[in-house]
Image (cartoon, rainbow, N blue to C red; front, side, top):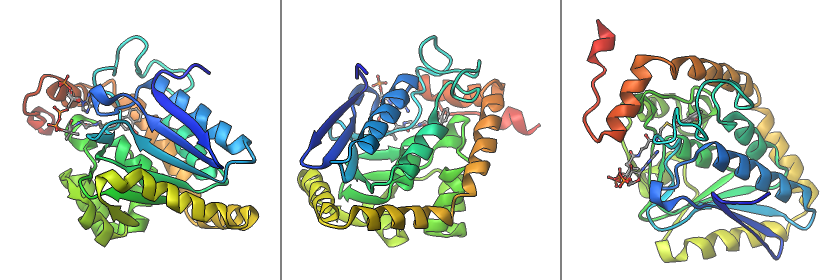
Length: 266
Ligand SMILES: CC(C)(COP(=O)(O)OP(=O)(O)OC[C@H]1O[C@@H](n2cnc3c(N)ncnc32)[C@H](O)[C@@H]1OP(=O)(O)O)[C@@H](O)C(=O)NCCC(=O)NCCSC(=O)c1cc(O)c2ccccc2c1O
């Protein structure tokens, strides 16, 4: 597959996937998701690979979720149907692929992990963060939500009260705050991030691949029911994206103005 939105490299048993759209803070469009799925599947299929690192290009962002400027555009994503389950983005498939690949996936969070980009690191097996990284959900601010793994699985990690706070208030959290919540495993200076992720991947490579695979499946089993909730969430999101309320959130972000949802409370 020709890769335009991501970088993909394999070195000494480690696959590294870098979301490479720095101009939009590594926000994803339909093509980005397709390329991510392709590369995770390649790493899955390659027996020499024992761990995968997911990161973002540049210093600003890991990933800021759905590209708001591509939403509704031709070649971007919309709710007219297709493989994305009616939403134009195969995000649900990507989440399943990250969960099901029988090799640990390490998120190396180099900057903003916001919205659907935050959900990506939540789903990864481990998170190593640069001390400068910022984390948060933004869906309710821009007329979107991930009511599947993004909320239900998040609650398993940080607890119900904190997960509700994260989604209802849409605030940003430091790497240190996220480590306290159990959402980040390790914090390093920004210049040491890639090295630290590779070091952990190398440690994993020294372990029994079958033991690691079965442990990952075992950890996954307890939250497997969330897949059904995720399908409902994405199905409803496809309907919601057609609404004026969702449009208001997206347009406010693009037009760089305060959002006004008051008209939808009448
Ligand atoms: C991350 C920020 C808080 C950073 O703020 P800051 O002020 O430092 O920087 P700018 O806002 O000026 O951003 C710099 C530059 O990048 C562009 N950009 C950033 N994020 C996006 C984005 N998501 N889409 C498009 N473009 C983006 C920004 O416009 C600037 O470009 P200029 O050319 O104007 O200079 C802040 O950027 C921020 O809050 N970003 C948006 C975060 C957000 O709302 N994300 C989307 C949430 S919805 C979502 O993620 C999502 C999840 C899913 O699971 C989906 C599933 C299916 C379909 C859709 C889904 C979906 O949309």
